[in-house]
Each structure stands twice: as structure tokens, then as C-alpha cells.
Image: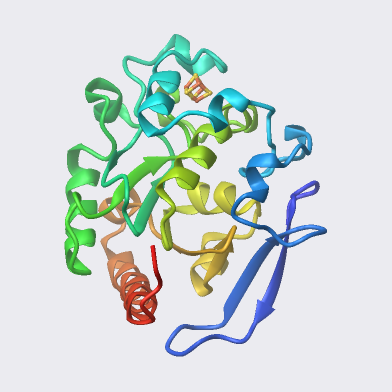
Length: 249
Ligand code: SF4
């Protein structure tokens, strides 16, 4: 784990049929769904959801209000080079949320998440587990495109994290699928490798998190599609397990 990371990763017994479960929880106290929005730890510690930049304005808005807030955001340098912000899209009451890294060129031009070839592949990944884009919600760690599709920088993530945190709180999904290393690491506040992240089921404030490959990486490395398929099957099994349990929403 990176120095200063705000999460403790523990190994735990796996619920069948999933592999060994990795429980990620805040330290020192376990997370609550409400807790992260009240967290006041300094954002300089790294990690996505515990920065808790004081922002009652963010906590007080609904999804539409949050989107407006993001559209006018100038909190990091990326606002200078963006064409459009990319807030996210899909069902506001989705049980399953996909989280990528940051908008790319096409997304920046259209203001929509996951368009272009990677978006089409994500559509096929979603369809492979029986859903459509309208059934799920898709968002990114960053709402503005880093020039040249560079990896998001720590200060950019820190500036943007409250938007995604609030987005997830409002959507209140039962499952999150992080797409790629950058999304997985920053969502979970850890620096372990994608290989390790893919081996387990993680938790973010009580929401189960599965990490798989980013669709753009799968386009570059078709050999990884078999592994992605296995990850998606785990995602589907977790979804069915949960919905089978008949949790009230
Ligand atoms: S990336 Fe996030 S924090 Fe930076 S300008 Fe865009 S919306 Fe604001």
C-alpha cells in the first residue's frame, strides 16, 4: 500500500462462488455509507473517498445539481484544456455502476462517458452479463480529460473526488465495477497491482467492488479478454446473489 493510503486491506473468507475476498475498509473505524461524506481527513493523504473536502454544497445537491456543479468546475488544471466535462450517464437508480479512469478524446468532444471503440466494447461487456447501458450507470474518476490521455495526477484526483463520492452516494448501487488499474487503485485507496485487485472482491462503504480490465486495454491486448470474461462472470454472480437475497431498495 502506498504511504499515506487511508485504507486497510484485509484478507477474508470468500463467499461461494467468489474467490478469496479482500475487504477494504477505512482506518481506524469501519466505513458507513454516510460516513465518507462526513470524513474530514486531509486530502493530501491520497486515496479517493476519504478526503472529505468540506463541501456542504456537494452534499446538498441531487444528481442534476451535481452535474451542473461539475460543468462549471475549475478546481484543477484540467478545466483549461477540456472541451466538455463528462459527468457520467445511465440509470440514476442503477444497481451496478461502472467506473473508469477519465474521459478520452471522444468523450471530451461529446461530453459522454465511454464512446468510441472502448465504449462499444464496454457495451458488449455489459451485454455479456445481461444488461444494457440504460440499466447501469457509467462514470469516471475524473470528469475532465487529461491532455494526451495521461494518467490522472494526484492533485487532480483530490480535486475531483468529492464529485464521484457524491455521485455514488446518490445512486446507491449494490455493486461497482472498476475498469482498469487507475480506477481500481483510486477508488479503493490502494496501490496494489491490477493483478492483485482482480483477485478479490473489495468493499467501498459497504458496496462490493470488482476490478477488471479497462476496455481500451482489452482493445490493445485481446488476450486479456478471457480474464475479463471471468471477472464479469463474478460480477454477474455477485449481482444475482444479491438480488436473490431480495434486499429492499
Ligand atoms: S477534473 Fe474534476 S476537479 Fe478537475 S476541473 Fe474537471 S471537474 Fe473540476
